[in-house]
Length: 434
Image (cartoon, rainbow, N blue to C red; front, side):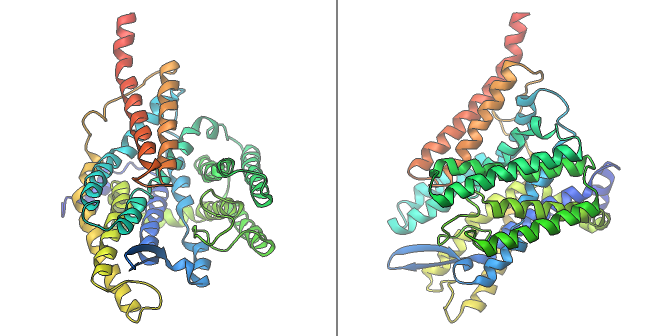
């Protein structure tokens, strides 16, 4: 094993013959695409003592148009649900969700511990208007985890999609709800909080994940659906008020990402439909030993890669900014500096991945080991607590690890701890009753 990674032969030997390799490849490619996108698009500068954290989307309509290709986060929801369909085989909702959250949140605890210590130190090192933006960005990436867990929590409903007709009804209902909320947002008849009803848009990739796993949508029909979704999105863009960039930018009046808009819902349908259409070809590609080895290694450290690229990216930008070499459009050294920073970030992220990936795959004391094995009040209680934790995770990104964000993270950790304790005491309680 080089660098602790299994060889291609070892990976092949451990892979079950019926493993759906396309799903694993789609999932890790989507995640790597997100990391690469953040790295390429990020710009920063320190102006008059203020740290400005921005991205190229605010200055280029070309990059905004490219988000229609590179905004591939819906594919992670699609692949995650598709991979979970068969494992959700019982009515023990809370126990099943706890197993998923145990793996997902394990690296998050390390990540939060790092940022807690780092921000305590940085609070005394950085000027206020440099520290505040850094603290705000610190846990911004956790929005995805909160939304993803809420989508997984909907598995009891998603698994009821067993026919093409039910798939069409479910997608139409979710898409229609997002459309209604968007129209109310435009008319000014709905508050900011109610706009987050549109989080239902992230369930649509999950619906298509179930459809893929159960063979409800053939490749030809999937391709047609993808083309239709693209045409509809072009029409929405032409009619307005939806705007081009599928990644949120401050200048957007109607956000496409937070909360997701009708344009994002259509984009999710398009991406997932095309993924289904291309799945046979992706599976054939994944049969190549080297491709499959990288896919497996990447998936066993997916959360590590996703989380830790942000502190690396922030650190590189801060160092260059303080050296008087800001990466910002209009600077004479922008292109050369971009190449240097991209290479440096890629190297450091890989080093972090190698060093921290084992933590993602090793049981965490006091966290791992909880289980709920039967349906009932305890299962419901544990599942509900995990949903509260996911909602708090999602809410925290609005502030980061400061102000109200600290309270949101406290609720998240408290709900996770309560779910774990409830899962731990269940067997002893049952034993005492017997």
